[in-house]
Length: 192
Image (cartoon, rainbow, N blue to C red):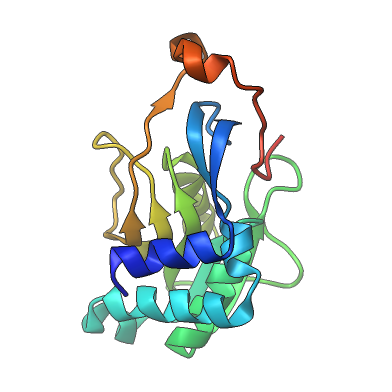
């Protein structure tokens, strides 16, 4: 899938929003990608996951024992990645603020994991999820995502395979431009 084809999927599902948004990272942006909307169509979600899987190196695909995603944003794309790769897909939750496996989900020691996210912005959630996988005995081989919104400063200890990279400017609370500050702010993400 080309970048324009991926963006067409977001536009078709009205998942590319414009306004004034406070992101889960706490930063502000004039654009927001509502991955839940783009993934609400199972056929579209399957196409996007298959496109991510196709971008993964063949050697990596052959090593993956399980797909793990952080809740809530990563659950759908993680499930579809499991389907595309022909492996189980489970997810992490934060019932007390720290990622953990629940619902009978677990990893066997040494199990090789592909961590899958919907959007990666600061990388903090991904790094916390990787720590949870490692604490459960798993080995994170790589990180994959539908969208990479990171800046050049974000680094991971494993290869990162996003389907698309989109760079919309983001601002700290004290950096919001006047024209953006004049627009009422909304917080569409899952974390409050």
